[in-house]
Length: 322
Ligand code: NAD
Image (tube, rainbow, N blue to C red; front, top):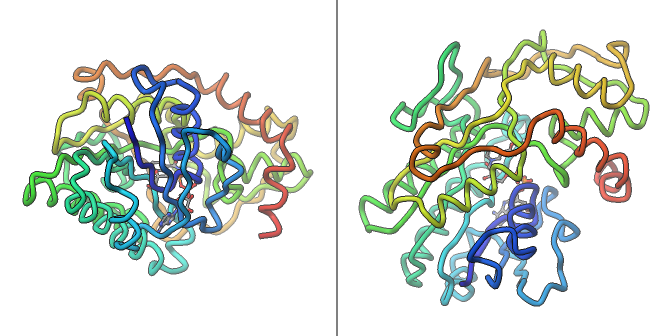
């Protein structure tokens, strides 16, 4: 089995690669993994076991069609994580998001088509559905993205669907809420708050802090992706849920508790432009079809993550200078 992972040096992609090479996915214990990653500010080869005999690392942009057509032949599947992923950066400027997320996905799909790679799992986000006051989005609901990030991801989802409909390419789409875990860049909420608190610095909380997010451990997300790769149906979309729903205030409280700090360390800052109030996905399809269920509780998962950042300043401190 040969799997090509785009964006495999980032937060979620590297967790997927480490787990696969560590024998964590049944039937894939001997899989060979090729990572294609541009190594943007978010990519880090320290996230990968670089000398592993079954890992090949290729530095490159997924928009580079020539490179993809050279590297892809012989692979059984692509798991496509590569993307610009930070909403705040997309509010500052959307060009990189359209480049990597829209053009990049089109390039991956085209290259798979031309090199005969049979299956693509396209990793997307719950943010493509937009904000929902109550209830949860199903896979049949319309895409109503509100940020340049989520709009670029929605564009990539539609391209994935179109390559299936037009060309018959076996593409499967996954949509997942906020992930937390180790090796996440310090710009994202959980690591930002944790690394600030560990350094005795205040943390910035957007608006009134009442926006609601679902939080899923990266390991549960990656296991769900693997279930979709091994058992999902061609052309289908799978919401991945089972996450814990919290207001940003509630998440802040948990992180303050875990870091031994209090609300004197919180600064309320001007809200993000177009800040979605709430996301929520209905994941009954993946549970019924593929037997998905998350394993991590937020209490245990978050504690382990805070411990990891506490124990690994050598991983995150260099990112602060960048
Ligand atoms: P990340 O920013 O940590 O990592 C992205 C990786 O992609 C980096 O290694 C980067 O170098 C690489 N990359 C970016 N542009 C590239 C390009 N043009 N060519 C090749 N490589 C490129 O992101 P993440 O949090 O690991 O997210 C991975 C995927 O999961 C993304 O598609 C994201 O939209 C999706 N997702 C993330 C979350 C979350 O909470 N982080 C939730 C749902 C879905």
